[in-house]
Image (cartoon, rainbow, N blue to C red; front, side, top):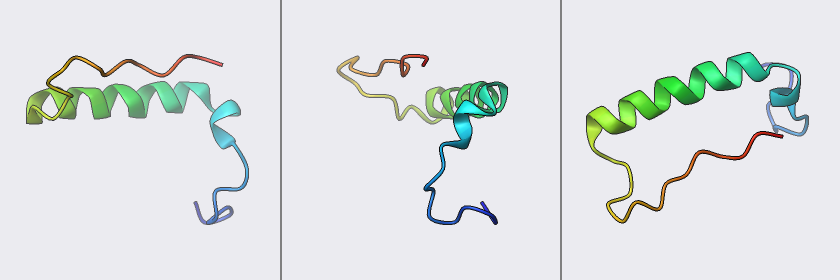
Length: 48
């Protein structure tokens, strides 16, 4: 974040394990907080 504040560079491609870790953490929180879409429209983003 410090080196790319504008988010111009896609660093997710360079760090796919970190993306998986953060996404899993968010999904766990979202399920616990009951904020996933009620209509079941949430799908994990496709892997590149």
